[in-house]
Image (cartoon, rainbow, N blue to C red):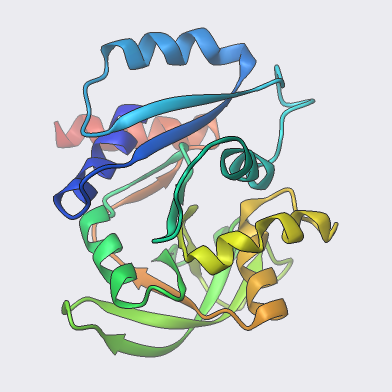
Length: 231
């Protein structure tokens, strides 16, 4: 899974010259990740950011893990910051994704996907689409009118993937978001907070192919079955 995610990120290096990928993990799996990286050969430098947590009972949420990367590294996010979850597998083309972001660098961009079932959508961050635009690159994006993290009742079956390109201005508000104290342990709540508090424009980009959220054993088995057939 991690190989797939990292190889996908390599597409961006057709556009950018350099960059570091930080992987936030808990200490319990530190040796496993180090062994993996010893044998991985990719397009970019990779560093592990090891949390003190040892399991689900004391681990940081996704939002605090991202904030740790921002605060504890010398990462340069003046041109934007890409965040993606390690438990998301998709056919998203990161070359296209970065190209679309560069056409609208003052916004936040996220990939969107139609799960086609309102009940299923309730487990994710749902969105409603506003105006669509075709960029200079020929890629199409849309303004996201509403962004709701795991609603009790879904009005849309379109969801965001746990992948985001944040403008530097958005990143500068991350610490404030965490201090706000309202359901801020999940990265999915950052977008609606930004939009509500600062009127930040958030855009979505659809893509073709496949998407799996492998946060459960059942979903992981489904993804494994899908890739076995493809091979």
